[in-house]
Image (cartoon, rainbow, N blue to C red; front, side):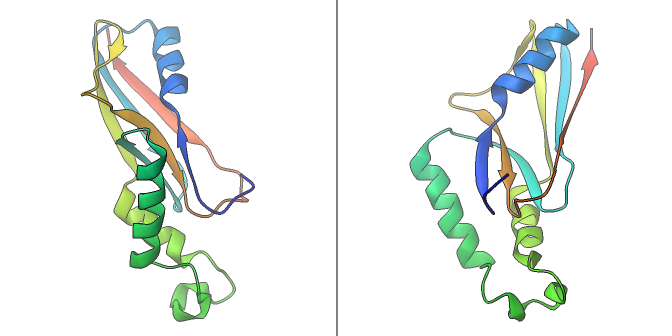
Length: 127
């Protein structure tokens, strides 16, 4: 990822995994497989994503990087803290072959220390 922070809607990719699985009833786990990334559920609205960014920067600003003990030789301590707030993974029910969401819910990958190769794990169980 070319940017340090991003919020990427991965709902369609998870739906494609579900379609390929053939599961009609069950659960799907979607996990950010990196310590400075997150998977979360919320609304796909650009103003909200901007608000996440502003709010997270007030909680754990990136700069000055020297304020974090973790940043001796690194510059991503804020990414670890942001991930802690936004969460590691989500579990979604599968009902009649579809992700069973409430209104406006979508699955997002949150990136807090881009520029490194990362992956998302999707695991499903059901019948």
